[in-house]
Image (tube, rainbow, N blue to C red; front, side, top):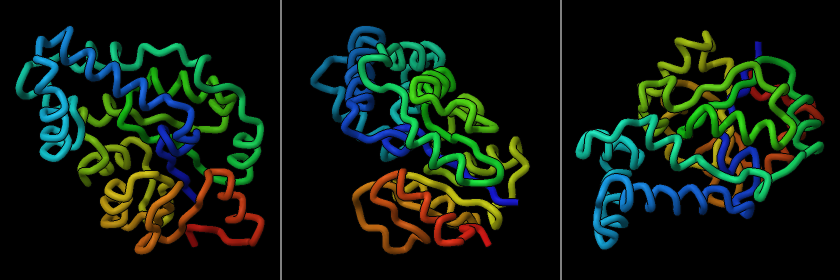
Length: 212
């Protein structure tokens, strides 16, 4: 069986949509207005938390006792219609991949459902695994992937991960996943490098079953 696991943000849609920029703006706003952190410290703390914990959320959980549900609800309170719409080409590309298809994101499940629904590809996926499903452990850690594997039952050797993050791909590769970098960047060291998510059709058009 072939298993196709997809990152969400900046992978299933183009970075130019501005979704992550808006999420980042709302993370800063949450830290300032909800947690009470002075705006001069926000950028420094976010860099520190990402380096130490993988995502800002875990740093806020540890150091400010932030409830993750409060954080996720706030930062993903977006007007999605203003950023994305139906993407029939993406739907078609995904449908060419025969096997188990899942989304695995460091964002909230509600965020994933909203984006997939707006793109018109929600029905293309068998499962959605969000950060709350893996105890708020981001994909930079192998433990996060192991939790996802336990829930899905997939085997890394039969699976490929599509990601825009080299760090996340590296973690997955250590477990035996095939890896595909989506977007610009240095794709050396990974099994595949696609400039666009639409290019994944080459896996089937050329008769390449990526997980063989």
